[in-house]
Length: 61
Image 1 (spheres, rainbow, N blue to C red):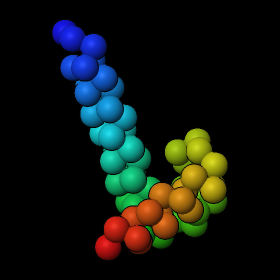
Image 2: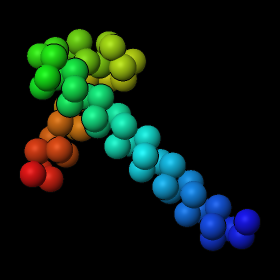
Image 3: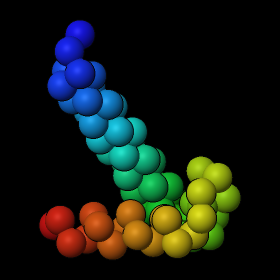
């Protein structure tokens, strides 16, 4: 695998991880009605990260 292909795969993997995290945040916050604090505890990330994800999703709509 070339260096460029390896970089492409790393970027692709990072985007898939980000997408999965966004989906999980949306699932917990919007569909299950958990607070941003509870989502953060559940996913073991900061509440700031949860809020940033929700804001990013809102901007994309």
